[in-house]
Length: 128
Image 1 (cartoon, one colour):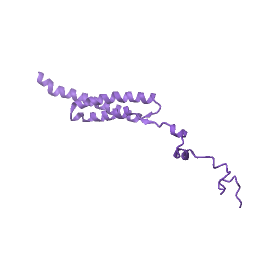
Image 2: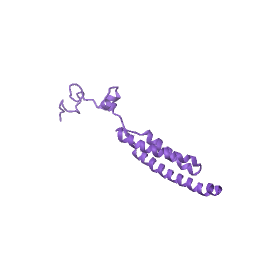
Image 3: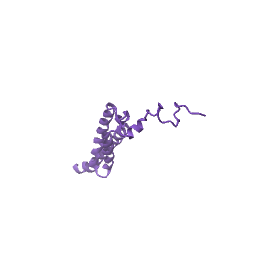
Image 4: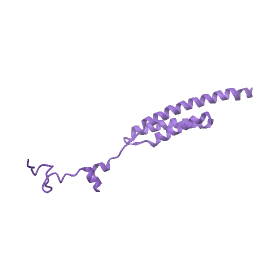
């Protein structure tokens, strides 16, 4: 079976229309710029990550009570991160922000309850 000059599997390298078509990947590897070089990928919001870290640090408020304030900071940071994620199309991380809100809110409630109970059991009897 004879191969035609238009056949891409032809042994004739000269004159075929397929030799001028270059894949964008080959072009990128050879130093040429393609449209894929200018695509911005979404990134995880640093504010959401830091809010989650602060909320998680507040869990150590059981050991050292002043660390419980980080729960409030993480709670506020989680709300701010969610707002920023909604406004910025290239930021993701809504799950991190929600986790920061839940952990922060739980720790604010628990630390506040612990403070009230501690005050009522240890401080109020002394004042009487």
